[in-house]
Length: 109
Figure 1 (tube, rainbow, N blue to C red):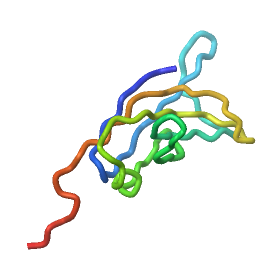
Figure 2 (cartoon, rainbow, N blue to C red):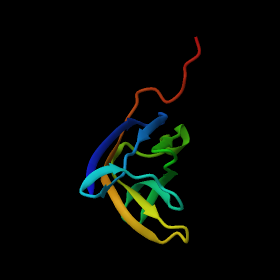
Figure 3 (cartoon, rainbow, N blue to C red):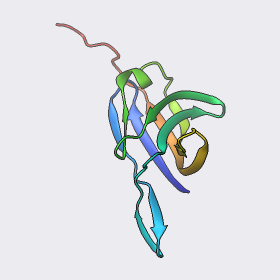
């Protein structure tokens, strides 16, 4: 399991690249899901704030995912599920920081 940290401003949109690897014949290689689903989740223990499916190695976080989340540091994980949605692996975990912004609304002149 690998560890990482992510930081973004409250309400921003971000695309996170997520690379999962596997060892084949003693060599580390990129792993591509075939029948599996890969999910990126942010929250605290037993309280998921938002989840995004990882598609083609990317999780896209939308404005709506973080606009109402209090600035703080949360946990995140990337989990792999089989076709029956049974947990197979948790290859990546870390901290996810939501940073505060000064202006939440666009001011019109």
